[in-house]
Amino acid sequence: MSSIYDTLRALQIDSIEELVDGKSRLIGKCDGVTYTVDASDQYMRRHRPEVGGFFLQYPNGHEEFKSEDDFHDLFVRSAKSA
Image: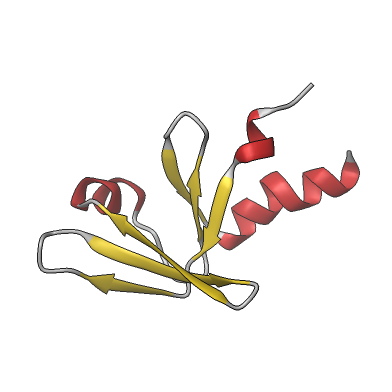
């Protein structure tokens, strides 16, 4: 049986750039590859992402932000104890 976490997309944020159209660009690397996510002003106000934390996108399209500690508590440590 699969869970929602099987296809969760996560990006640890290395930097945040403000764009001219009211959006912000979240930038991170994974295995040496740079990835970017253009986040709406609404997302930025609601979630207040910070460098070091994680941008998350679930299979249903829901997006959220978790601090590094919260991400590790929810996904890394719980996976090790399972």
